[in-house]
Image 1 (tube, chains in turn blue, orange):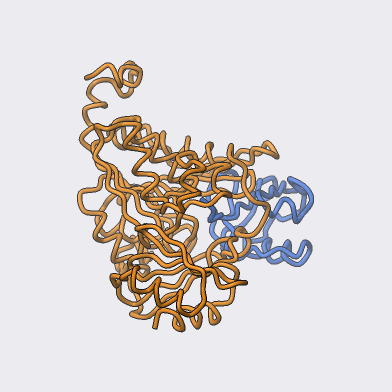
Image 2 (cartoon, rainbow over the protein chains, first blue to last red):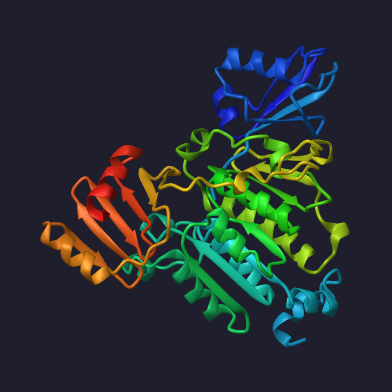
Length: 76
Length: 339
């Protein structure tokens, strides 16, 4: 299983700080697609961290990995 | 070193040697809103040699909750933020050379302001400008520090050409802006936290303590008690058009036309003419008054009350049209009044 953590407005949209999913074997892009449908999120320009390290869309998630979605924000 | 900086020189990683370096450096702060106010104040108090600050906006009442350099009298006078910031920063430290610029941080303007700079502190509110900063940073090999916040959330990343990935490696394209602009406002502590991260990194870079520079992107949510640190070294993209081998600096290419931008969460459109022009305020004010509009002004700007919309015109021909998010409507108002 995998812990998926959401930041900023993504957390508000999902309604929880994190969810648990079985994402082992999926790529980041595939997980984004799945979460987009389930929670009506826009994730295409959101950064993903795999075990606290930047992960590109084609990176494969292993069982037990923690994935965090961090939206780049623009306010200042 | 004078008594003024004693508490900073007593801090071992800086010391007298570090202070000497800090005092010989030039910092460019892009934006004089919440982040720009705070970042500029830390740099000025720390005793940098020279600080340049650029901003296109003027001070409004809704800024006072978090933009620490400004006062009610700046609001009453509708002072441009760059001018109000310079006034206040000079009161804080008269030894620092301060250069303020009222205008848009276009790629051309950034190319001009980068000369002599040792560091760029991002304090903007949009990714269009950040991507231009990112390209300028790579082109001239000057480090920059990304910082941004919304609500109780904030983030920062230090970008050093040749050492770290750049913002274009991480984002690949300009992110959709709408998802953060109009959501949930902003609380001052989130601003302060981003400033703390940016300014600490700035001091390390200015004191040339390169080993201490943070190589991860930090993000936090002060209300939800979330903190994260994401290592980014793997994000380095050899094919990146901003920092890769076949770089083209895509965000420095500008189309030669009037530019209009919807300002973040402000119900305001900015119109920028293709070329800077010098507006003669006296004459323009007379014309507008004769059309029946209420016109107020100061040496930096004219404010024209048009009922549902309000037009604010700056000396260089740039205008903010408040009360609309419609680019076409804003352009037509501008062209109707400014020709």
